[in-house]
Every structure is written in structure tokens, then in C-alpha cells.
Amino acid sequence: MLKKLVNEAYCRVRITTAGPLLVRSGQATISGPDLTPVLTLRNGKREIFLPGSSLKGVFRSHIEKIVCSLKQQVVCYPFIPQDEQERKRYELQGDHRKSCSGLFTDLSKRGDEMRKKLEDRTDLVYKASCPTCRLFGSTGFIGRIAIGDAHLVSASQTELRDGVGIDRMTGGASHGAKFELEVVSTGVTFETDIHLRNFEIWQLGMFFVVMQDLQDGLIHIGSGRSRGLGKVTAQISTEPYNGQPGGFITSTLRDSKEHETELWGLGRWLNDNSYGTSKDDLLREIPIIEKQARSIRSLRSFQGENLTFLQNASTNHFIERMQQWPDQQALTAELVG
Image (cartoon, rainbow, N blue to C red; front, top):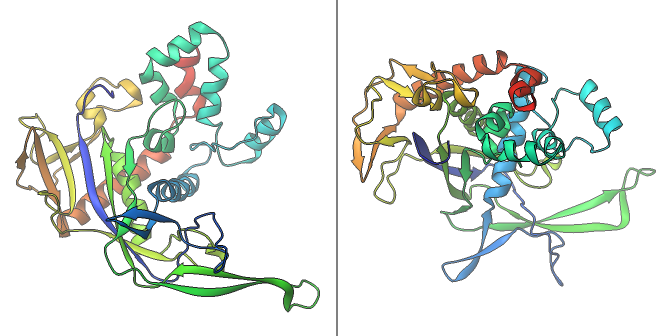
């Protein structure tokens, strides 16, 4: 699966602060704010940015909640306690299935034969993985999505905000519990690149669910979210960049068999139901978009009404797929047996 590329999708996303935002650096200043934004060296100067790892974590956490709302015991929770009794109690009471990373770790302890199987049969490892691990990755399989650092595309503006601990007895400010935060101001814009490779159609829908909630301001980023910090909005940029068109771009190799009125997912490209995919992994009757040749790739750029169609169609595919997701025992039977 990873030895060749069958399809790709990528876009540039603009994230604009709709309120004060703080992604903490973890380092207090000697004289100044106690909590400051994370900085990077870019174009010869230090500037604020949003780490790609933080964005990926926010994306994953949000989609896990969505999947659990659609169907319980489908998505795994990576941080289930390692103690066997505590883990079993959590799995029985929780909305999550057993951790994918924990499953593969436990299987690897069975001996050299099983470890070799885990290394050689990546198709079975992918099949046994939960939806979020298939897209975002785990210790057993690399993810399908890459999210870059979000860098400034507007003037950097920060402001100081006071924080204070509350005395539980008096309800007033606790003596000596005052601190200062340096936060990114409202209206500051960042841009990041997002790239999906060898995607299934429902994974596009999973991505668009997050994008829609970001656009609607339903996802907060960074620290202090319970205090009202971190509200942002986001949208896919339609401006061309690096010689590529804007919008949401899908890519296949030139002269592929994909019809102009269809968009194929990984399962349709494989066409053998391997990796736990389906031969019917495609969207039909999509808007006809002129393909653009770029090196060995053929690109289609979805914008405006075409992007809305793609978003709605793939989101429906995602919802249907999650509601019909098999239980963990059925998915792991071939790997464990």
C-alpha cells in the first residue's frame, strides 16, 4: 500500500483567530508574561506559528468525538490504562474499543512469528485498525494525512491578558495567584498545507467534517479553551500557490483509468477488497472538472459549488461507513488467527 501512490489530495487551509489564542511554548520568560506563544525561526526572525503536530492532535481528537457519536466501540482510545484490570474496566464502560497501538503491542509479545506477521502483513494491520488510526496513524501503521506547521500570512499581533486563581472560600482573587498570558490577537491569519495519500472516500468525508466545524467556529485550538481562548475559523484557500491551482486538489497518475465523472478511493483502485477496503469505494456522477497535467500527475481542483458537492457526498459516505463499521473482533480475526 505504501510502496506506490494511487491517489492523493491536498489543499492549503487558512486559519484565522476569532478570539485570543495561545499555543504555549512551555518556557516562562525571566521578566514578562508567565505563559507565551510558541515561536519558530522563519525568514531570519522569530515569529509565532501553530505547530502541525498540535493541529493534527486537535483534528484527531475532534473526529474521535464525532465517530463515537455516530457509533460506539468503533474508534480506539490510545491512552487506555496499561494495567489489564483497569483497561478491561475502561473498555466495558467506555465508548471506545481497545487501543490499536495496545493491540499490536500485545500481539507482538506472542513471539517472533507474530512479530514477523505484523511486519509482513501490513494489509491486515491496516484492516484491524480503527477509523482514526487508519487516517492519523498508530504505532502499527503510518497515517494517511500530513498537516504542516501553520505560518503567519498576516501581521503578527499579540496582547497581554491577566489570569488569576480564585479563592474557593471568598470567591475573590487568591493572593499571589496572579499570572500573565501573552496571546495572539483576534484577526491574525495562519496558513498550513494538508496532504492525504492513498485515501478512501470516507476519509475525505472525515476531513471535511473537521473543516466544516472549523469553518463554523466549533473547534478551539491551544490552551485556555475553557476560558474562552482558542476560537478560530478556517477555510480552504482558493488562491494558486507554487504553480498549483487553489481549492481542494485531487491527484492521480496521468492516463489513469479513473472516469471524469467519478472519484476513486483506495478500495476502487485496489479492486480486491484487501486492506479492509471495498471495491465500491468511489463517488459517481461528480461534476466534470478539466484535468490539469503536472509532471506525472493529473490534477482536479474542486472549488465553489464543486467543492460543496464533494464535501457533501464524501461526508455522507463517511457517516454511512462509520455506522456500518464491523466490530473489532471481526476486523482482527485474520490477523490474530
